[in-house]
Image (cartoon, rainbow, N blue to C red; front, top):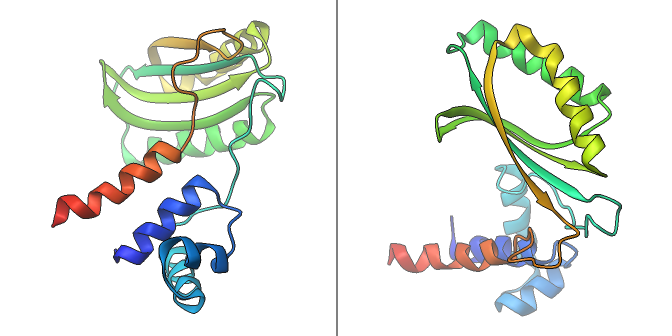
Length: 174
């Protein structure tokens, strides 16, 4: 990735509403160069979507949940596809806001989910709803709940710090 592209990504992560003209001023480049670079970043999949980072509490969400899962056994390719279809269909119909669900590894678990809830009852409804997925052979799971209304907040969810770190990657290569 070129330096100008990395800088554009960094600036867009801080504020995706910026026009190409504004980006050009900030990074010290021309507007046509920024437009070409942004188009290339979109085409190559570096930019997947333009979005905002809302204040979830103001929107009425009080809990953010990070749930770790352990499957009883490894999935073959056919089971992975079946699980993806079941979950995709369920996420579309389900009454819950599941922000992310992925397979991975760590802490003895091999999948995780991040969800957001209006209250504790909503979280418990999600846990009850999840019981229908016995065909996925879920074993254990553990959840870490974050009270978004808590008085003490260490570092709320933001991409601004990641945007700054992205620029350090270029320096590390040199």
